[in-house]
Image 1: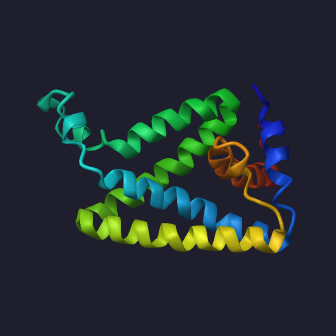
Image 2 (image 1 turned 135 degrees about the vertical axis):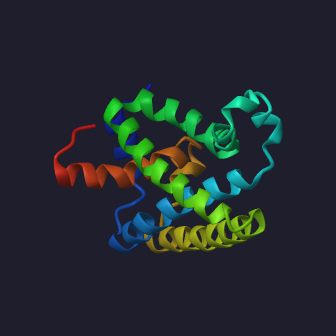
Length: 163
């Protein structure tokens, strides 16, 4: 298995251009947020029925978005504990935002998420056109999870947190 540094170095190879980097620092977290919104929008009553009714509100948070976060969390934990903690904190904040948007209705959540998701990906591909290199995930789909960690790694370096 690759180390965190190996993953981030390989990802950085196709993210050298300043404009592409700036696009990614905005678009990557936006894509994560909107993906969570779309996953949250998938009906999850069958999942929620796995928990006893006595758990009430907790059942609401058992959905496809939180299942995805748990699986992604395993990936990040295998990278490093500090990356796992940072990613879970960042994703938790995003899930709170998704939850509050969902209170306006699933159609609002899916509309905002899907529309913004498409726009963010368009910008990602524009960034790679400027860079002159293909997105890393064309080589390995795991880079879809490395992108957010790459963004977080810049914050970690700035504040002196090792990963």
